[in-house]
Image (cartoon, rainbow, N blue to C red):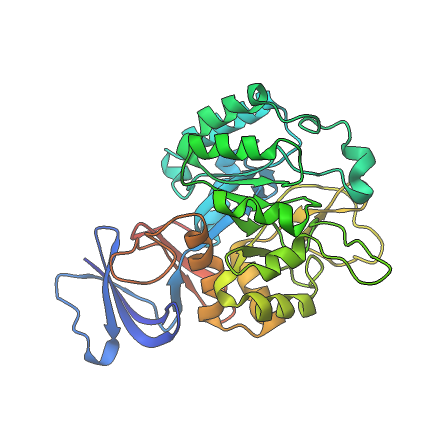
Length: 384
């Protein structure tokens, strides 16, 4: 058995200073305050020295890390996420790839997840193929992308069959004609799969029609999430309002250092509406090495494409937590709930995401500025 001593434990709803955490066979065995908890003599002991110990991060929406997309080389990108405390990762595949490349990338990631270096992979998040990526200013440049025409079973069934229960989330645009048949078939392939509304101009009614089938996530909330129609008599509503209104839909948030993806005021508003229980912090890590456009000088945590548009982030989960605390005033328990427990719960992981007896001992040790000092996966200290 392992004992982590002198730790400031980040629990789901509280902090326990100067505590002892016991781990046995990869699971959390128990915990107690140091002053009244005896550590058995045969225990292996790691002294946290007053550092914070919380549940490992669960990043359900991330395309790349360390400047490399998972679909190109997971051997470089996946270990970097673990180094920054992400003990459960859903590599994310986007809508721009062909069916042939999808099949290749899915098989590669499934195989890599079975290796020691890919042990923190918990499945795949499919951000596509059936989105509405061409709405608004993107319409011209995305018209030629695959998957923009009809939704046909002969196109998508091979993906469903290969993925099986490895797919945790399918992001869809509910307004796409034929999407319901795809959703039903995807659910046959994995009855426990979740759906997200993403890159969509759907009405609240179109979104809510998919809730009974497992739609419970709003993909990168307030980013590429619809167009508000302005009527003569009132302001219209779009995807954002539907996600805010429905208490059973989680809102993914990309929280960068300057509040570029989501304005800090909007972050605080979403937190007030959704509550800490329905926010999921994501990195949306990517790789788009375009030039930094005017007005963004010094921005070091966002990628830009060759046209000067935002093209994902360079964020890791530890940084997202730090930024959320800075922009909203959230404390350690609240930020870790959003980065660990909520995403785990949203996609069906019931064995992780919090420090509780019987849960997997996926842990991150940090200082007061959320700098990662150590990571435990299944109770084993990882090499830095």
